[in-house]
Each structure stands twice: as structure tokens, then as C-alpha cells.
Length: 427
Image (cartoon, rainbow, N blue to C red; front, side):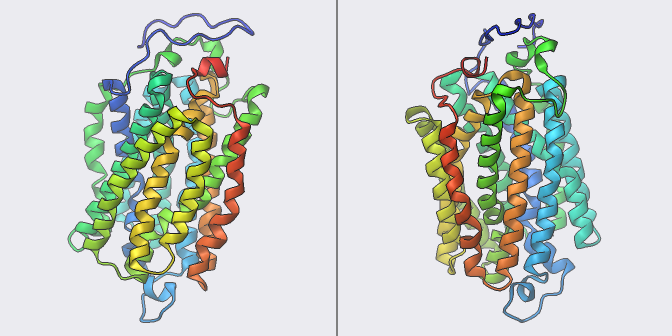
């Protein structure tokens, strides 16, 4: 896996697929998924505990507005979440460094640093301190998740790639779900500070995971001249159109998923007054539906193609997001579970496309651009959703989610990569 690098091919020469391609169940791929679990656990804490954070640092009253119930206005909560999300743009240069320094070294370093900073957020003395500290760790955890997807895609061949990407996405979802589950079941005992402090648990497990994480041969066998400029190096002219298309898709997906996932616990706890036990049950129910979505997305990506699966899943995510905030506890549960299904369906084809239509020399940098575009989309979605929700909560998802849907058509301007190796699409 980490053998001596071969010489880079000459100008215009087609790249060759690596001689060693792993199964999606190989220990190295499972270890990458375990890193994604740790990143998900650290990154989702702000969302899971947001309701208590707002009440702790705000001033809840007996009024009927979101500000009265939550303690902070929708705009304040939205701006805080937007700042945390916007900090993930820092994951762009961090992910880009993996094109020069390697996947293994960077993904492990970023995960460790991100978890340590997240644990430090437990000591936040105020809302904006919490936002600032959490935002410091966000770029590293975002880069960790992006590079875990890249590593899984590079370690595997076409027949296993969608499965490997789905496994990493499942790992991240398990980590995120564990945060929500721990917080809601132990809300009265450990509070939001305890949840953030628990980020030390995956941090302590990281050295054992690191022993199994390997360097993908696709990267290790590429000559240094083939690796391009570090961090923000130029993506070659033939691939700039593809880069613009995948960035537009990331933006559209995150305009929807940013508010849909970030406001849901504030909405459940402070607007619908759902208990911690029922909120935990909602998260538990979403686990199997998310897994079913990953399995369905993997199957559809390998049977009908990456592009149509992405387009249909994006439309479904928007519809389920609107259902989630439509005004009843039943709709909340259904929308959350079905939203997890839609998110699961879109992850394997979109992650596979991102790996397959770009060359190894810039793949991590492109993943960073993809992450940054998603961050900007989430920020736009959070700000718009929060502003509309201050007065018309029921209209907020309609106004925010529906305008993003036409972007789904852009996926058909990308080449269909089903059954192909990256070297065939991006020589």
C-alpha cells in the first residue's frame, strides 16, 4: 500500500489504475470509516445541544415566538450556526494539503486536533465564546470527513467504491447520531458541557485506529510532479467546468440540509416541546432509515447510475425537510426519519462522482472546494431560514429549500462514472 512511488507518467500519458485495490470491507477502509465516526461525533455536538446552549446563555420567556421559547432569537441562533458552518471553509486549504502531504498523515492530524478543540468548548462562558471555540475545531473535522471520503474512494475499485463511500458516510452518521443520542438521553445529567467533553473519548481511541489507516496506493504511487500545487493549486483547465458543477451541487444540497439538520433540535425541544426521551427515540428511528438510504443509494448508484440517483435524492431531501417543519410532532418524526433516508441515498452516488471525475493529483483539493461550497450553501440556508422563521416558521423551509431544487439538473452535465475507474475519466 505504501510501496516505493513509481515515476509519474509523461505529459498526456494516461494514468493507470493501481495494482492493489481493496474490498470495501478491508481493515484499511474500515479504519477510515472509524475516523469518520470520530469526526461526526465531534462535529454534530453544536447542533444536538443547541437548544440547551440557547437557553443557558439566553433569556427564555413565556411568549410564543421562537426567541421567547428558545431564549435567543432565530437570527442569533442562525448567525451563530452560520459562523460555525462558515468556519468549515478553512477545511478547503487543510484538505488541499493532502494532495502534497498524503491522505493518512493529514486525516489523522486533523481529526485529533478537531476533537481536542471541540472538547475545549465545554468550558465556554457565553454563547459567542461557544460559537468561537467550536468554530476553531470545525475546519479540521470538516477536512477529516472530506479526506475520509477521498481515502475510501482511492483505496477501492469501481465495484466497491460506492459501498466504501457509503460506509464512510454511515460512520459519520453514526458518530453524529451518537452525539444526539447521548445528549438527549442524558440531558439532565451531563448537559451540553458534558457532551462536548465526551469528544475526548474518540480522541483517546484514535492512536489504535491510526495503526490500521493506510496510504492509498493511488496517492503513494503517483510521482511528486503529478501531485500539483499544494493547498489552493490550480485545477487543470479540462476539469474546471466539472469543479464548478460539483461545487454548485454541494451548495444546493447544503442550502437544504444546513437548516433542516441544524434547527431541528431547537424546533423539537422549544417549539414542539418534545421530551428528551422522545427526541432520542426520533434519532434512534432515523438510524435504520439512514442506513436503508445508504444501502438504497449504493444500489441505485451501481444500477441506474450516479447522476439520476443524486437528482432524485436532492428533490426528496427538500420535500422531507418541508414536511419536518410542517407543524406537528408526527410530521417532525416522519420528516426527520425520511430526511435521513434521503441523505443516505445521496451520499454514495455524490461521493463516488466526486472521487471518479477528477485526477488523483487534485482530488483532495477538489474535495476541499466541495466542502467549502457546501459550507457557503449551509450559511445561506441558515441565515435565510432563521430570518423567515422569526415571523413565519411554517414558510421558512419552503422559502429556503425550493429555490435550490433546479440546481439538481446540473448533475447531468457531469460524465456518468458508473462502472469506470477514475483513471478512465480523469487521465
